[in-house]
Image 1 (cartoon, one colour):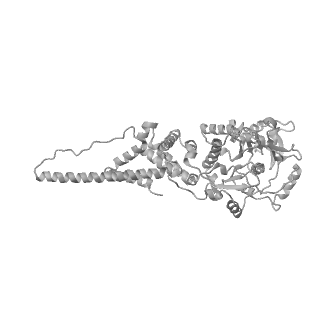
Image 2: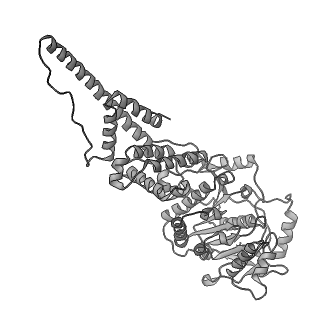
Image 3: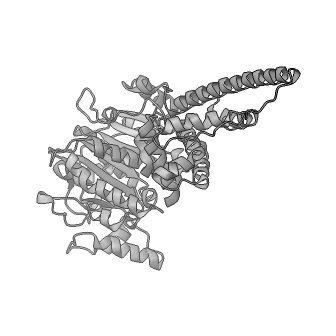
Length: 516
């Protein structure tokens, strides 16, 4: 790394001038693309360590497990040491092996510190995307969130949301008058999707202590930016969960960080690997949200780098905002492939020395066609570039090495144990218990009154009297001014006023509100 730049790669035979990524333009986002096996992961690794060396924290996902090696220095015993040194000589690099400061994170808490958020922080838009809800189902989910706000019901984990949705379904008539149609079919569909999400690891993702963003934006004692690596090999088995988690992180950064204008270097750089998962099947509203975040988050000093196989995986409106580009080889065996190749070449500033389309097709493993922003943010001329070798280990850590890194972390203890504080589930459980107690007392009082009535009638019969009074009671109904909570308590109490009603409500609420 030179002053104010990151050395990406350089010349050699048939290659152009050395290529440097300017830190003052690094928050204008970037793209690393190329077919499988062409060197994208190594490029991601050298960029991430370059940012770290410059004091810029990094967030990245480790899809294949290879990037964990950043926590250890490279070694002369590695099988690629010889080729690395040869390449370093060609591009004029004095290669020095060193590790990067790394913090490991994992939704399951196995390969890193647990990473959690709350249902409320995720919000209905991202949850609807995660659960693949229809428009009507998303509307019901918004009603549930609105009720939670009005009633002071904290939505922290999945059981909170499941309990609230059950209550919404049982009080759908009252809620429909206030918020619009709430159907049992929509509630049931959401509940089924939540069960699927539980099976995919959603129970681990939602809860407390929730991730503090400040724990991602840290530097070590030497001033190097922390490299936050999210273990994603298992997470990738649930691609919708993976994409939603990273989008949530990006959205939280956007909403939390202050405006900084054009800094000398980014405050944080976010690498989104397998970026096509974010956009596959995404509704237009979500794509527009990503576009807005990508456009505006640069003013908060955050650079976003999409890593994917083909540039066309990224929507055109977002692709146009990615100023720094590293294009590894693309295959062109079919008509569709050739069209994608031409389209990728058109996004580069032409170089009179070679044809960009041919270069993208011909570059070998570890080579790329690069275009990095120059002074005044002008895209650089396309260059064939030998990507520099990494300083940290190329390949994964051993399990013992990973455990040692996690044990030395300063933030691990904060997230080690899950906390289940008083929230929607517990509050609704207490309301149900109170309603059940009130209904039981009302039933007991009714039985006592009936006993007195029978005793009175028996006495009148023996004395020759007549009973002319009615035992019917006027029906009660909820006032329109009742709160949602009062309506809930009254409806449960009315249902439990009879032995049949009591058994029904016990059956419905027993499974829902039983202790964990």
